[in-house]
Length: 276
Image 1 (cartoon, rainbow, N blue to C red):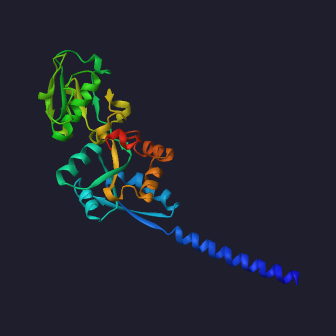
Image 2: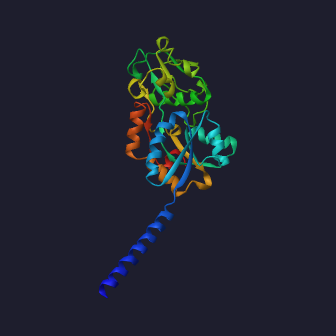
């Protein structure tokens, strides 16, 4: 009789364990999240995709060829998250288009830098020198802020990153500024004391920004921190925060440094620091 009771007990325990495991499987049902990117971010997100799979999250990467459609697709519900833009661009875009989107996490900075063939330190740039900088509106303000941070110029206290060289209030070295197309900024280096070059343009020209720039943005350049964005009413979804947490782990930071040869700076800061 005792053996019979033991056998029945074991059978019941096995059944209950099976039910319990089945219940856990149901509660951990795979979640699918579509993430919109442009091509440059794919190597990072392939790693996030692998890590998310271990959390039973399937990430589908959706690539876009421009900087407009990823936000429109997000607002329309065609994708769940996107990760391709600075907070400065994002803020201006959602205001202009009246979109109800919000950041859910920070990712990296693609730093703009001051480069020179002639001087190893911006402080050595002599009076009356010429400085080239990108003329496009989205780049000009950023370049001016970088020049101010380097100590070469002064800007109004309320300067918000928008505006052209007429915003310069202090120019102690009487420098002259030559706005040119961003893609040309590396090519004019032999003709100027220094040139301000976008990250992507610098990399294409063969520079390693963190090594070759004589002055470079760091993680204090808050408007130019890149973000992961979601629809505002879903910004608190647990699965999205899990993805952000996976992104902001040290192995991903090392992956970014390795894959992009230190041309990108992993930047994981609270959303409050970027004005959200």
